[in-house]
Amino acid sequence: MKKLSGAVSHPLVVEEPLVLTGTALRGALVCDGGSLDLRGAVADKLTIEPGGYVLLSGTCTGLIVVHPGALLEISGTVTGQISRNDGEVWAMAGATIGGRMVGSGGFFVEPDPSAPRAVDPPRFRIAGQGPLVDVVA
Image (tube, rainbow, N blue to C red; front, side, top):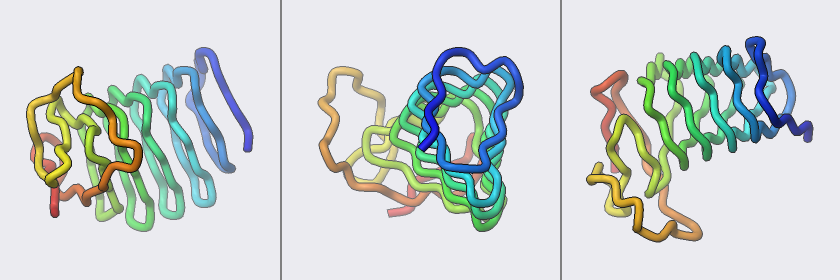
């Protein structure tokens, strides 16, 4: 698996398994067969094409577009909006989306920075898009 750290100043194109611990300043495109383990940040648009996969344990501040046949799993923080386009979006308890934290009961709760992170948190499907995303238990 390829690893990348530091600031990436060009749009990042992911066509193979990649771990990013740095920051993609001009966004990222995850192509069919590509997978991105995002432990750092994407500071612009994140697009996941059909057949692409992203595990977001870091931060994304831009728009996230999840196309049909693509998968996004969130355990970190999304401050931008999510456009599902019929792609799959899942969030682990403790993930923060649009300023709201996914609670262990399968609903949004107020963020609590002092709450301990679960070792193997439950995950929930996310429906809707933009500011109207919701947890589906």
